[in-house]
Every structure is written in C-alpha cells, then in structure tokens.
Length: 301
Ligand code: NAI
Image 1 (cartoon, rainbow, N blue to C red):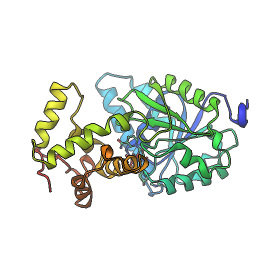
Image 2: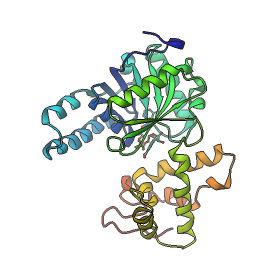
Image 3: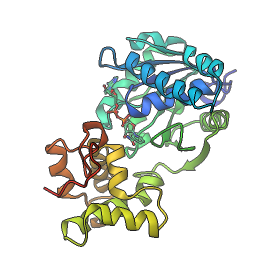
Image 4: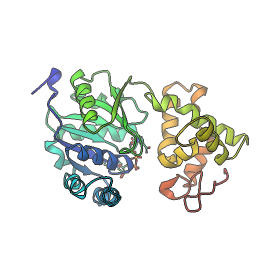
C-alpha cells in the first residue's frame, strides 16, 4: 500500500544492507533475527560472504552456550544472503546503507540505489554525523530517505536513533520505528542535527578525554577507569574509541565540528589525527589507545 509521497507503509519483509563492515553485519544480523530476509553487499569482493561467516560464528557460539537454540540460529543464518552486486537489491522494501562516513559516496550510493529499488522502498542511512537532508539531497524521492543510526555492537546495543530529514515522509519514520520494535531495539526520534543525540552529547567525553591526555592530566587507562567506575559509563572514552575505530570516530568529530561552524566546544584532537595517520585505529588494527594483544595502554604519539 502506498502512503503519502508514494512511500510504502507495509511491513518490511525483504531488506538490503550496503556495507558489510562492523555496522552493516550487525544490522543484517538483527534484521534477520526479526524474521526479515536480508541481502548484504559490499564494494570489496568477498566481504559480504566474510560478514556472514562472522555472524554465523557469533550465533553458533551463542547456541553452544545455550543462549539460543541451534534451530533458531540456522533459520536466522538462512535469511542472510551475501550478494556481490547492488542490482540484487531490486526487490527490497528497505535498504540500509552502512558504508564509509563521507557525504559524496553516500549521496552517490543513494542515486544508484534509486535506479534499482522500487518507488516505495525506504532507504535508510546509518550515518553517525552527516546531515540526513544533505545525504538525501541528490535523491529523486527524498521522502523515502531517513536516518537509522545503530550503535556498536548492534545486537547488544538495543537502541536506534530514527532521524527524519527535511523531506522524509512521516510513514517512513513510522515504518522504521515499527521495525525497531520487531528486533527489540528502542527507537529514539532525533532531529537532523550534527551528531543527532549520542554523537552530540557524547562528543564532550571523547574530545575532553583527548584534551586531558594531551595535557598530561592522566594516562588513558586511568581516565577510562574513572569514567567507567566512578561516572558509571559502560566503557571509558578511549575504550569506546578503540571499539568504534579512530578511522570512523575522528572523521565524525571533524564533521560535527565543521557542521557547528567550528564551535571550539567540538574541536577535534590533533592527537587523534596523528593516531589515524599512524594506523593506531583500535581493535580493528589490534592497536589503538590500547594494545589489544596484552591490554596495555599505548602512550600518546
Ligand atoms: P567499516 O569500515 O567497518 O565498514 C564499511 C564498509 O563499507 C567496508 O566494508 C567498505 O568496504 C564498505 N564500503 C565503503 N564504500 C562502499 C560503497 N560505496 N559501496 C559498498 N560498500 C562500501 O565501517 P563501520 O564502522 O561499519 O561504519 C559504517 C557506517 O556506520 C559509517 O557511516 C559510520 O559512521 C556508521 N556508524 C559506525 C559506528 C561504529 O561504532 N563503528 C556506530 C554507528 C554508526
């Protein structure tokens, strides 16, 4: 059934996920767990198939630990199909993009997707910090585009920000809210502002922690321990940056700073920039603020 602006209000049964990295694979996993058939695709050959293997090993470990039945896991895995071309997403009701955090590639992807999917399909972006309105600005049907911002790791972090851009149809926001309930995540509506809620409020902890490190106030593990154990955070700011990957979180800091017209409150850290250049990205490179072999903090550059 078509809603306002010709955007479907019907239930999502078939989805596509573009970008089979940390976030895309987690999004595919929760969608499949909710009974949605998911195709996952990545520009890097073989990456989508590798993502399915990782999901399979995570899920089979859960079954082995008695957290879920082996039958449920196999059904979930059977719903995920790695594909090698975007053209395979033609029949999807929803496509979620989780590619690199840069405006131009996201806009180009949406332009391409619009030629592939049907007119009623919803296209959602998992952007952390870019404007949903700007991402949708090249679209012929911007009313079908919205932000759907998940948290890492997606299956464990049971929240999702739902962001309407300037042209998003209310039906699209409602459909994404309803879908979140199916995979058991709490949807939180956020305005289309830089960093939405979490990366706006959370910036302060990341940038201030980096400033403290640079000023020599305390080492990374002490700053993390204080914020974790005294302030009640689940992980400290450096542990979080290592989990996210500085190649993702530093551009997010730059993007938020620039979108707020260089407000000094959001100024990114030179220390983070040097670490990106040094390849100290976090868990994905085994070394970041911590050495993920022996767990020791790595001194600032
Ligand atoms: P990632 O680097 O792990 O994965 C990105 C994947 O997209 C890569 O496999 C890459 O080959 C693929 N890719 C890049 N350009 C592509 C294109 N044009 N077409 C198809 N595939 C393409 O990155 P991650 O961490 O999964 O982030 C993806 C998105 O999710 C970004 O927008 C990021 O800001 C957002 N995000 C990241 C979070 C995190 O904690 N890492 C949290 C929430 C959102």
